[in-house]
View 1: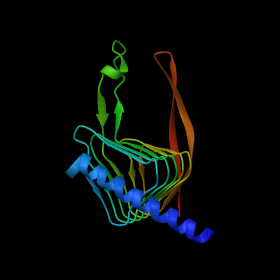
View 2: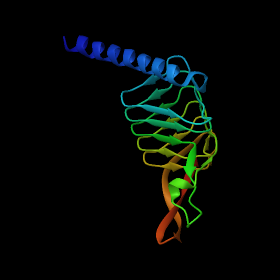
View 3: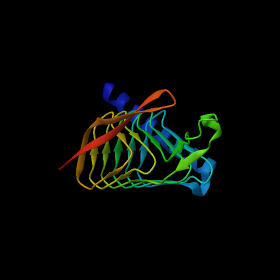
Length: 180
């Protein structure tokens, strides 16, 4: 009996994922393309604003609480898996004008590209301009904001510099890479 319940729950989650993809297609039309056999666990959110576009390849898996936010373009290859709480943003608030509120300064944009066969660990944040190659593994909690070459493993962030901006300490992180 327990096995039947597990199978029923898996089927129900698959149906909910299909329904969610249908709703996104109705909301965003040509701004979103999702490949075959891609799966979205509950509480995965996709937001497309302005001229945003999202392309997700075949056979991708998004765990609970993933968030994909596009104002320009996010492209994800085939066979990628995303852990819980992964956040992807192709834009950032502008903040250079100290005489204006940050929310009034608009946004800067840069495309995000994620290659094929990538495993993105839980609590990873992928920021504008990130280019992640094929066959890349990104460990839990990493912030990706740069290019990661094919066949790499990113295991942690290492703070390299702290600078002061309008009374706020801002830490800039650098990813460490090691080839597979």
